[in-house]
Length: 197
Image (cartoon, rainbow, N blue to C red; front, side, top):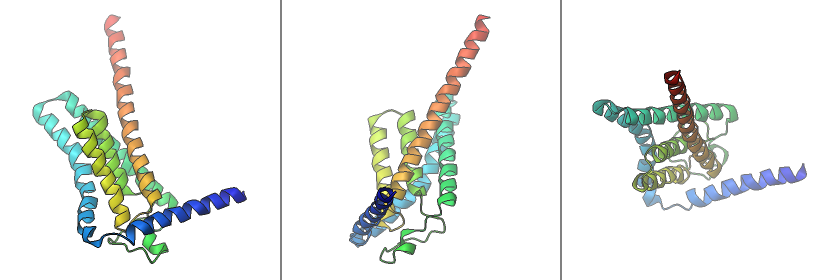
């Protein structure tokens, strides 16, 4: 029990030490850039799945529409998971607990997990699973990592919030993608069985 308590204390100290190193010692000239990177999460996170669906409808492309709907479902699963965890864990923002952390945005919601990061990673992972081209995968994850880092630079999240957000986002995209594949295979087999009968 003592080992577990010491381990938890070490992890908490490491969490805040990394954040202090990033936030307190940051290059303040980069603050505006990281604010912009951080805000792209909302526009791209919602805009990309909608754009894919609209393009698919305009082209009457069923496969592309399936991908757009799959990405939208992943975003919905991620949003529900993030909101539920925030409300269950109720972790205060770093600036509330540690006054030395300079929070450069005002947020009403709790800290764990990082919603910006989870949305960025669900988008990046959904894109990567549905459009398996290196020129989509690499920029998607570079952007998602940039969003995650920006949340620490801006003093809004602990590193553990960002890591949890990334895992939740990737997991939501993977679950949605696999569920879609399973449903598709199930109905394909059922359709073939009915045609043979």
